[in-house]
Image (cartoon, rainbow, N blue to C red; front, side, top):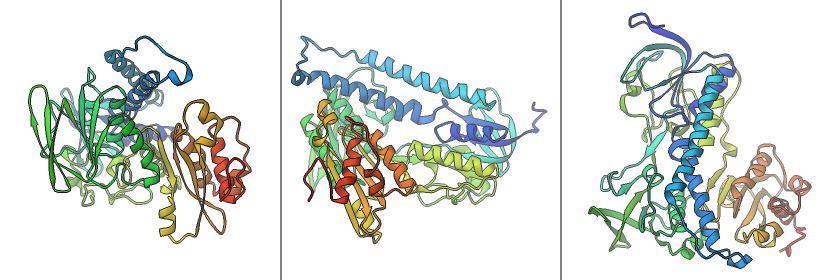
Length: 471
């Protein structure tokens, strides 16, 4: 209870209820901490409400719709295929509601206090939480900052109306006729390809020389080919310069190799990255939290900031803005606060793009391994050689294992193809446990499954592949 303006004492204040914050709160509660978690929006954060989950739901629906339109090869035809996008959106919303409701129930079951509102630091061990109705003060022993990130807004393309961020792109009530996507990174490709499968005319403008920069070309070229099959027009090394808006359309002016072009569409979607939520009224500057030049909170290997009782995790710290990275850091921070000897190790953080085909990577690429001084050998197996892949019409892609020539130690894995997002998990575990090519080759994989390709790739790396010619 609050007496006057006195502070309520708690063990841990968690700011942000996304996949970093809520995981930190639950783990801390499991370890005996009295926890308050605060978020100005819904539990689950961007991931569950406006990012990972709703986008993957719509991507799944788009894939099903596209597959049904091309089912004649397996003898399935229909007179008429209809899309009720409003019903699709309701289905997506039901998934979000189920998951966020589940998180809320988990918080309650662990007796975690929740507060819907914002936080302002008073000093390094006190904060005021507030909303329209109340503004209590709390004195905390420790605090975890997990405020996440938001889409970067370009000055020439301010969000609103027909200029969309990823948030609005996931909430459209009707399928548009055409869409321009500024940014060919993973968000732009995922959402652009999704809408293209729903029949939208999509144009993608990417500033670098290739889509999905950060992934090797041998991985991204299959995605590029499928974009072309969907009649998606992709401009690389393209600079978006300005936009003209009417009530019904937008016209974007952009330059490609000094040649100016214009294109008109129903909407323009801006996906050029995300910015950490470290500004605003939180008051990090007031208490002296150290930030990088990019506005990220600097932490050590225990997720601890320059202040001894304040920790930071997720999109507000350096590294890829991934939900699973945030959840991993959350558990480390909670365990350190509880006195355990936990620390972060980023060697095995998988990266996944839910494009078509899917892309997944963990550990080092071949190029990265060579740059680190390894003598590398690789094992590669194509989806075309796998019976399960062919039976589900998924012949595009490959599994590639990168290993140390001398020891056979697996350094990294890249997978392109259907279910790459699920197949990568085995290889994350393999790298974490220090497995070699021989370990994977000796592991019996069930037949007929996509997982067999992992074993086949390991055998190829050892020089005795069974279902392909050894080079």
